[in-house]
Length: 574
Image (cartoon, rainbow, N blue to C red):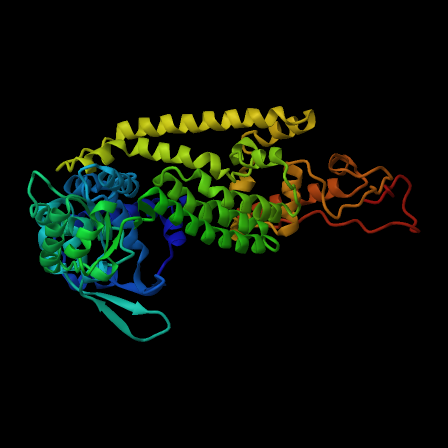
């Protein structure tokens, strides 16, 4: 079918005149019908069909259904419109239905539960193939009462098995249970489907020593007294299979306080038990010793990734830089936001970035020059590279995360039955955090500026101007001409920070000493003409793209040496 770019062009381009609006209106009408009326399942067979691809879970395989773009457009729109209804039906105990910062709040909430003096243990439950084993019949029935606003749409798209086509094969599978991973509404459906189970296991313990639980999709966790946690675990094993939720003891961990370990081993003989802690939703719940060990292991992984990126940067520095800023750095940024007191443990990672990655993308070494490191740690729009110093940012990011998720974290800890997702208050908090972050970097920039000479200060002012860094923060998309080769990217960074251009001639064609400034202004050196020709070619290409006819660039003049021309003819070359 048509890809996302094709749909975007048809729906948004003025080229199709009123046809674009008519198509958008028809899609909206289809979405309304799917949300309000039961449609004959056979009529939606093409709409729900997916291309099946396997993702490596290391270990295991996660099947993901890649549906038609039309289904994703409609599903995304419906999810956004009904997000508040799904959140109202599931929050604050189930946090995967679209809550802002839900996963971070789950980590903060469970850590607060574990640190409570009354808590003896927390249980981290992992279910077996949860998304694919969900009881679809029970789920569609329960959703009609849990969140009726989205029930009709989910019934229309899930009551008949979807056809899953396997790439490079003429075979197909039928999706008869669970949810389609890749469907926009999958998380909303899953969270609403398990709410009766969440409520049932919550009632298995007494109010006086109630187990405090939090769920992120199929990742359940509960903390309290050991006796109550045991009853909660037994009820989950008893009731879970009715909903298609099968707890897996081999991958379930019990984190206990040190004085309760012996007692816990007798009560939970089939579970993994730790008094140090265990990984939870990408962060860590447990003691300081366990947290340090967890972060050290993560740093080892990240250091290996940085080495790989540094090797790539020797050939494709722009691709490596984009992968670092838009991919790899997000991994440790999340750990920083959800794990307290780890700044000291990240020094090895900072050293690896400074000694391996930055020299690789610059194609030069700056040694132990801390002024340069501070400069590169500034945001791109402030003249830096956006490669932040983690030893300074980790504690700050954790503070910001706690602040923005405070209300949800407290609701989880106090086990509230309802939660109002106050978006206006959230916007105010995020605005306050943004201003605080800007003030932090403003102070850092002033520190850097004080260590620079006058030429470097002027260079920093120029790179901080609006739009001066857009080329650096853009993704290297070849189709849009944003992809730079190694020499172009290295030279652009050299110009940005007033480094010397590598492999440039020491003397200009005019006889003067060569420098960046001289190269850009000398008319005999060739760079002025190259710059003119580059701009000329871009304009010509844009005119051709716009549909202009007979677009040509200025041809080179043939030398006239030795030829007799009429009096007054221009005999100069060029």
